[in-house]
Length: 449
Image 1 (tube, rainbow, N blue to C red):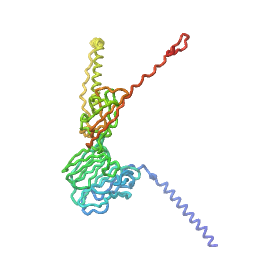
Image 2: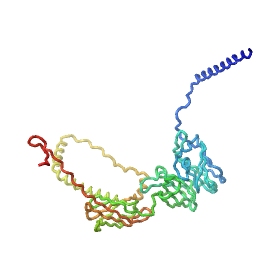
Image 3: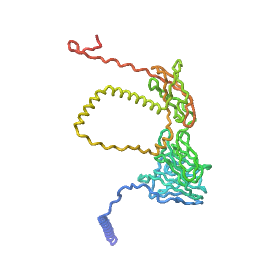
């Protein structure tokens, strides 16, 4: 009986404690006037808090990894899936460590990135570690600035600088995102940089010496020059500062061949080649032959022009025709203009003189951007020429056009030919029947008797 009496008392005690706890929690919730959990979204991009080694440090016996510490957890795949074997994609595509020979190991550690060359840290080198824009946190906030850390494993930090621009010569635009490799001769390891949105690049803290500078349209992201990728290179001696311009284009050991001939008018045809021609070589230096098919009768060639020269010639001829037409119109309406001027003069003599208008100052030319100034240094390559002959092309006939000695941008030459087809003129449209009412008032077809 005593044990049965104690059991309800113990259950009542537990129930009382539970009720007291719920009451205390409710009171605490009512007394808390702070903001609920959550709040506005965090839109601040990742911030680099520290880097090891620090920029400017000299550590002869450097071991372990270089560490880039951020203020929060970053996305392991924020660098994207691009990149070749040298980068592996992801964060490795946003890290540049140079000079190195071989691959660079880049690993993710939640709020930090660890970097180390697979060949190990070499004594007596000045390293540059670049953090490129594109690293994002877990909220997809993307870092848009770049950071460069320079440290040494032996010599003091140098202060020479190499700057320049890289353009796509054929496309006439900057080589945005292209790779720049600056190799200090006779070393094989190269310093790396990426071309920015303005087409410029810059190396700071380089050792003085003679450099081979290479610009590459690094399409596969492996940070090397591969076959069929556009590139350009130059040599420069760096003392304190130097500037270079790289004109990248696809190098081909096979010269340009004539691929297509299209009529423009009765004496003009447009020729298209398999690749751009060397703009420094005048078109008249090419050997051109035009033969009428099938009897192979030669047609005398009047001129072979670049597209810009042909457009200029056409514009001058059009302006001369417009001037002659305007002269004729002025002469035909001269009498009427004289009468109108006399009438206007009599009306103006009766009206008070008008106040003189203020003269506008001369409009100065718009300032050129640096890219336009650079592109003016060389003519733009073209894969087309304009052919003009002295004898008119016959409609419906075919002509054999041959061009020998065409040269591409890297000096390779080739011969080629194409068939020019002159279309027949279109027949006139058939006459439209005219409906006429007959004597009874019903429509009558004029084409019937």
